[in-house]
Image 1 (cartoon, each protein chain N blue to C red):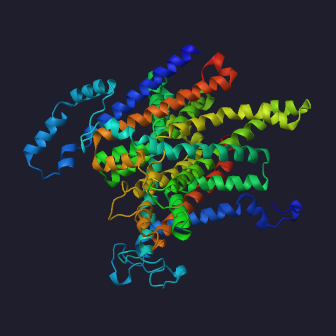
Image 2: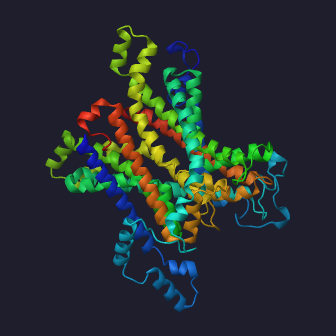
Image 3: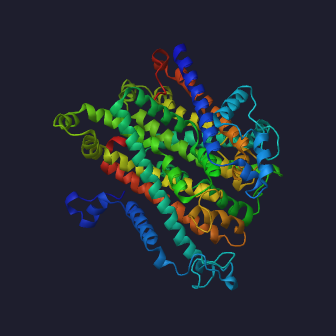
Length: 311
Length: 290
């Protein structure tokens, strides 16, 4: 188990390293930030000075090495727009993003998992069909459409909630609901199919055949086994806490990471985009590792074998 | 659904509906309509999609008390929403189609390569799959788009990168098991080249699973494209896609909600239809995926 986790950790670090490298080369090969920031018809001297100031005149691999060395020391470079450290710009947006993604995450869990379990236990009932219909809608309605429809109904027509911004306490409701509903639909579908899969297993039949009450069969045999695949998708949702709200934040003018990313991307602010990519990759990878730990905890088979998670 | 009458007494209609549920038929009909609209966009659009009519700005659509002059209303510059919608449907479908095709081709090829060579090369492909799965693609797409600038060709290629790993995973798994079955070995013994074995023998055997996967990635690609275009980072004006229209319709949410609602409805109905058809295809073609 320990060796397995050590290997897992190594792979996680490798993944983060790959993401940084990928980001660095894609972003540096794709265009000249000097031209973007200063505009193409700036005087050649100032473009040259800009390049020298940001180290853009050095060979690419030297820039890369310098970036890696600095990144290891926690320095991700400065924003080319306002000169502040990119990492600060990114980190100060984290609370705003978490303020909508964490409650949305709770909403997903509280609606999605019970709905999925209920639907599976009452297969083909009206409630099951309704849940599945809603969950298909959750897959197919893009988040910006859902967001705009909610704005149209609750802000424009009814006037109950603010349509954008973060100046009122109620501003937070619509973004949370938008994110939560879509995620709950996906989670409900997953939970349902995981439950159905488990309920079809011979050990469930064996448990009811030996006279166990159905409630105990479900609670003691079905739920723990269905929890294993569900953990995977929940873990993925944890990984998107930081960057899963790009579109929603931009609809509601919410000052989080997502909007910073969109504006950094349109401004071609290399360092900020790289810092966000790194943060996102780190969150995803950490979430994956946590999921692997939880696997070991909820699934006794994994403790001895230690081969889960590898596709 | 309804109480089933005696098997022999069922009419031809009932028997037909057994294999072709109404919902699936409706979905197929919608997809067919979209394809017709996309193919005949130039003939169907009543106006040029960039034509301005400043005297008829923000006129409401027919169902909101407007005239048949602009059936779906007009936008802030007096451009006909219906014409823009038709053009947007064409562009969005084209992007999603080529994106999906690219993903399927590239992913399947990578899966074949991994399954054929095994060892280090397979490890490399698996690492790329892991990498793809470890970062939300929207973020990567945003980064790449912004820094490479935005051309339609690049955008389509990016859409193709979105879900290749799904095909790679499926193709690899199925090919490994196919290679262990008799037929692949038999053809190989007969002296067929690798290209022939994979293209003419393995591919047809795993095609149904791949096609079902395409019905999953096609709506995903539509959603990704419209999401990026909505953010203003996808399809650039003067071209127009469905996400684009929703994006600028947002500004007129209070005064002219139809600019946003029409393309939004098309997006939702299209992705929904493809999902329904995909589920139905899966049940028909590939019982193992259920």
